[in-house]
Amino acid sequence: MENTFQIIQQVAFAAVFLTANYIMIKRFLFIRRNILLGKPEDRSGNFVQRFKTMVMMALGQKQMFDRPLAGIMHFTIYAGFLLINVEVLEIVLDGLLGTHRLFAPLFGSFYTFLISFFEILAFGVVVSCVIFFSRRNLLKLPRFTKPEMKGWPTLDANLILVWEIVLMCALFNMNGTDLVLQTRAGESAYVAEHYHQTGQFAISGTFVGFFENFSTPTLIALERIAWWIHIVGILIFAIYITYSKHLHIFLAFPNTFFSNLTPHGKMENMPSVTNEVNIMLGIGGAGEEEVSQDDSEVPTFGAKDVTDLTWKNLLDAYSCTECGRCTSVCPANQTGKLLSPRKIMMDTRNRLEEVGKGIDKNGKEFSDDKSLYGDYTTKEELMACTTCNACVEACPININPLEIILQQRRYIAMEESSTPASWNAMFTNIENNFAPWAFPASERFKWAEEIQQNEDKQ
Image (tube, rainbow, N blue to C red):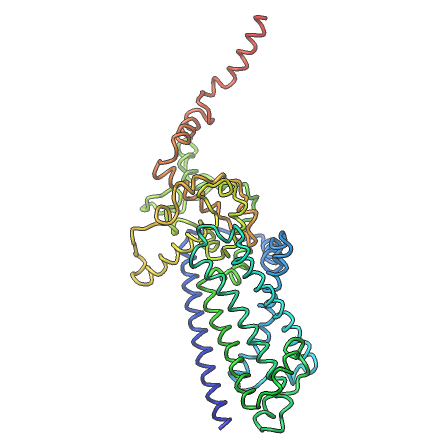
């Protein structure tokens, strides 16, 4: 009977594990395809500097420690997520092979130390999640209560925090009942075979007194239920984060690796505009920068929709963790303007998801007469940007909202010609006078001549 139960568990776990992996792979391919809908951009070269940036920003979370307390708690959750995966590997192998604590005989006493270390990390994760949950819902920090955070974004953040607490509690329950069952090997061949002696674990060992009065069948049931909740919860968690802001757990690494290594204040020229200017000045050809459009393709300036952005812009959008550090330092947002760099990133990701689903349903020529600019972002918020780069400096994983804002402003200026009147006057002056002022270059030093004339008269 117990062997039949074990086989049923193995088959059920294999089915759950394979199904979860199928869904995850399908989802990751969907995200990859969406990112590649963006225009090409060369972010190759300088491998050492890129690798160093990735290690410091994604693995070491350097930027998070600008706010030390939050940085330590975030790093605890992050380290717990990474290191506890060693125990998850053991659970997965146990599920597929029908074993129990496969690594225990292999590691000996080190196994006890390892699991105890994981449990201490798990306890730190629980404490950090409770504090983060309280900070969001009781203290209501301003950056977590901005308009773009209403509804799903807040629910998403809370769900993840509660989920992590449940997973860690299931881990403690699983290990605690296991420790008691290890002392009851004489009651059943199944117990003797499955529940190896491991020694006391740091956190779950304190629960042994609570479980000691339970019967052996009840303990087995509790241990198995906790085991299933823990591993199935982790698999569901892994699928869920691909639909949520927590996708940054994976994408922070490629996103920081492909960071823009040039100074933040440098704005890249538009190749199509550079080409037009070169032709106008008689330089001819595409100049130093190549124009990628086919001859048959009508060039557009700036970005109206997500497909007008680069693949790195779209990777930025999927990597955004919605922490709001960008918005909290944005001078436009602080002075009551509509602009929120975080909302720009969320809008870009939401529109990209919409386009991706439309392509899956209708093919590559999908069109829904909607666009990022106009249906998600507005001219008022885009024009509020001061291009100060504060949002870029504040991002923990080197996301650049400014590039997406600038591309849409270029569309507004060069395709719609709907920039403010004061801007249009400046553009006209630059075009005619090579300066933002309404005076020709020949009169640029007229003021100095007038001063000299006045001095001569005196």
